[in-house]
Image (cartoon, rainbow, N blue to C red):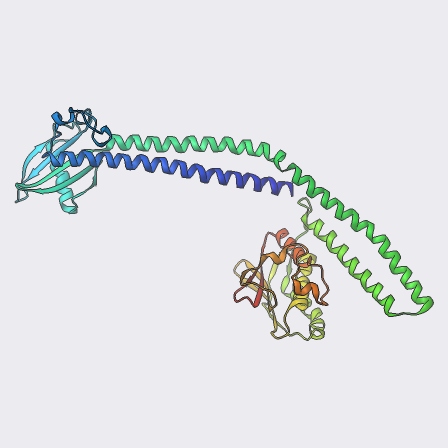
Length: 406
């Protein structure tokens, strides 16, 4: 139990931090990217508006709001080239003076490539471009963003690397501190288990004495409704004690489950036969759908107990107006065990609260149905010991399906 709690603590803590860091890093990098795009758009628009040149004289004038304009250094640090074509799509002007890494012929190839694409703006080969129609034809401006993108990707990689290093350090710290963090819960759970085990053992002796004394009274004065009632209540308490002990043992992480290959189809059929009389007594109909020859690797005694719990639960709580369905199916490597029946106080959708210990709805508490609300908790513990899953679901709020996947 302590290992599970520590694992959950570490996973939840790490998951929360990863989500928060992911949001922060994502926001920072997306913001950085859009700032680059916005800054480049300002440059492109300025060049377009000034026929492919930066208005140097204007940029040296003082601005009312410096945030609304480019820095005076931008014309000298921006790498760009300009191409003009006439109405016949013939190149009439090429300006590559402000960029070193491209030749006139390569600039023309870039223009021809975007001409084939047919878009008036976009990105190509590390350049962001914009094309407009003019009186003389077309003006195409290309601004080099390769250096800005290198800085962007460098920041992206660095932020992710720092994040991963920080997460590794946090993981180690959580692993070390998790034992101390969940220690009070683990101690409380351990005391609870010890209390249940001790009380169960302590109850066995007085219950045996009560049962024996009742037998003596019956020998002296004969059987009566009073003595029958005493025997019945003692039997119920003994059953509760056994269930509590079984549940405590199933919860122990160190307990070893002896597993073997066996035919679960035969086991299920035997269980159904043993419950036929009980279902008939309760005036309920049982329909079975059991595939032949299904072999499972598990503990036969525990899985037999699991099937008995499911059938007993249906016998106690199923509505008489509809038959109870019990099935065992093979789906590839998975084995599906299920029951379906109509019941009261069922909500539409997920009903996994039925596996809570000592859970019983109001109708079952006030009725004559005997039970402690611990059977399905034992079923869940058995399934978990076999690395399976169990769920309770209602598609219409009237019928409840308990499905087990092994």
